Amino acid sequence: MHSDVYGQALSDYYHNGINSSLLLNNNYGDPEEMPVEVFFRSEDDLTDLEQYALHLCRGKILDIGAGVGVHSLILQQELEVAAIETSEKACEIMRKRGVHEVFCQNIFHWQTNNTYDTLLLLMNGTGISGTRDNFKRFLRKLGALLSDGGQIIIDSSDISYLYEGHLPSNTYFGEVLYQYEYKGLKGEWFPWLYLDQTTLIRVAGEAGFDTQIVYQGDEDEYLAVLKVFS
Image 1 (spheres, one colour):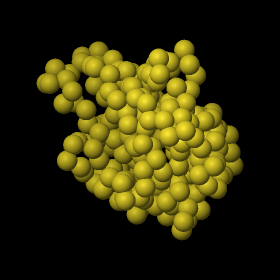
Image 2 (cartoon, helix red, strand yellow):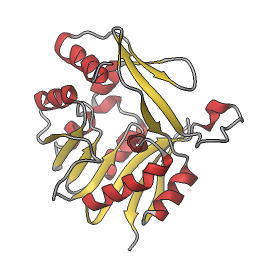
Image 3 (cartoon, helix red, strand yellow):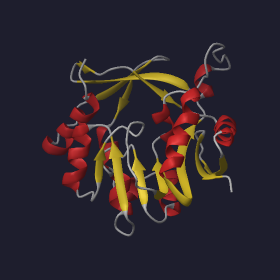
């Protein structure tokens, strides 16, 4: 298995203009093709959800799962932004693109005394937690990074439509497995979590957060703002 298939595709695109197919194998259907240019979009190319999320950002910001810095580069024009990302190649690209502060770390293992006014998690930010049971632990980790009065801005989608009315009985339907494949190289399988709104609100409440759904898209995607109960 190749350790950073995702990062290699990003690097080839950034350094050499190569836009070969980045495939996303999954456990529920046919492989999906991820256009690599999606990770290099300009502000004008962002979705309405993303643009609204950036509009809500304030204070000192941590962009979690930052990729190659699409959102960080926009925000740092006016605000103080740090980016955290696990892919070393993506972090290298972020630095070359001009993101001011980059941490190449796994958010779960990251140790810091820094706190932030806004934690930003986009492009299905709930996915990083992997499973529904782990989402509460994830929120507690995020809570430790928040300044007083801080906010978590996070998006997800309800993917129940994939099952055509026959939801799995032995697992939460929003838990999926993915594997990146690029130029014949395959990465490790990894868990990814999509949360429906009701489940997000419930689990966040159990973790001590109040949730507001601030945007609802046409394809079951939504944006939420979480704040610690006062």
